[in-house]
Length: 474
Image 1 (cartoon, rainbow, N blue to C red):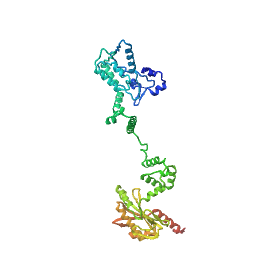
Image 2 (cartoon, rainbow, N blue to C red):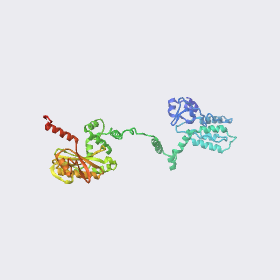
Image 3 (cartoon, rainbow, N blue to C red):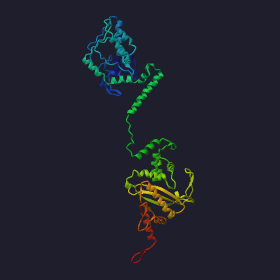
Image 4 (spheres, rainbow, N blue to C red):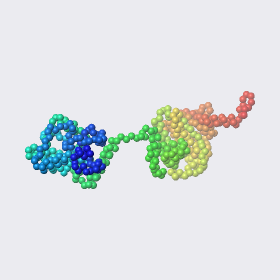
């Protein structure tokens, strides 16, 4: 009720407090700075009461040297003066209202009754331009002794300092915002009052969106997953993106498929368990990715191009590697390769050609780092039976020649003690006294893998008895 009494508007006395709370507002300049909790947004302290005078919004520290109201003897003139005073003190306006600027002139200010009567239709705080026109009109006219009443305001140095203090950042920001907001309209040569209701609505929507855009640009956002390991970050990000999608509507990037492919190759059973707890690509999706790489029996240019690219960044000591080769049995069957439009799993020795025999053996070559932990299969061949030693020797030289062109250096070969392997190494120049052979002037040592050596030693003990100096031992 203190706010209603301060407004001095009799129309507000009969309204309910709920109605006043929702539909009426008091100008912000009727409160001093110490009554605000914050300025952006503006919030008052609890139980705040307006204290700044409502006429020109001067602070309590400012002083008027003299104020005199002289009215004529006619009752109508006195009533007009009272109505004018009530009108100037009625400060109930909308939330978008702003008060007139501070006075900076030290000359007496005269306000004529005709000017007051013409401005009664518009509240003082609701139209700053009307007040500026009113002040400019009265400043341009000298004081008239016939004026029914005058307001003389002589502002001294102390009052000027108080007024300058009162012109704080809040008022400056408010006036600046009012001048800069309709910049789009000024460029088009329009005013807000010239717009139709629909255009006003669109203009207000544009201002709101502009403020929202500016706020989002200034807002500092941080990624909560930035501190995670790159692989874990990739997995979590893909799950957050696909968690609400249907299984057939989930999409994965190439990097995500490659990451999940490494998990699937390490343990298919673990990968199937992982897919039950989180969203991950189906195994068929990963197999399709692997099949997209063009791999054919023999020397694969794609693989050796990749090795050449990786070898450029390796240190010299990490380029030393060994060549491993071995045969494995496969199930004899024919498979149609839709990508190449051919039937696979016939006997195929790469550059040496194919035959009509169905393959039962697969020969695989792989290089592995000697001082660094890396490995890469480089070639494979199909054969209907174990590869003969003569053919195997030619294939070994073909693979070593292709690996040397990548920048890697093969220093040894490793294989089991199969008869065809031993025959091929002997054809290359291997012997028990000299366990190496020369290739392009470089010595390449031959080794048999220790697991097979231990197995053969065990088999010899199991097959033949051992004789000591006394007797035979089974």
